[in-house]
Length: 91
Image (tube, rainbow, N blue to C red; front, side, top):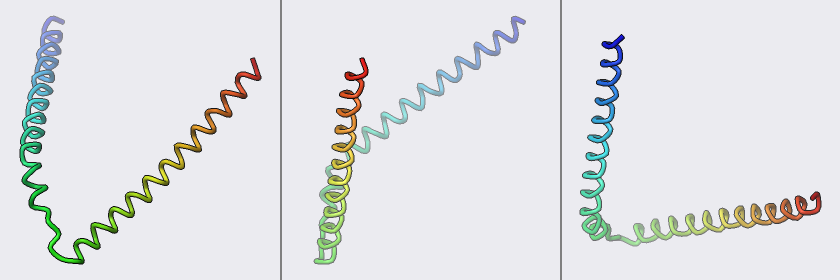
């Protein structure tokens, strides 16, 4: 029985070590990505009218998506208000 507990304890320790190593690698990758970000932003320069039009279309799509999500959020808030009023009446 002691050997089973020892094996379990050792495996648990290994899992913790692996998790710590993964967290360390993740934070290093994140720092490296943040360090490269300004250079990536500088390298993204639309060179042609087609590139600019493409980026404009992406902006328009994202704006439409934002309006849709905001509309859904407003509907949900209205529903919450209705449910609260209903709950107050039931008390």
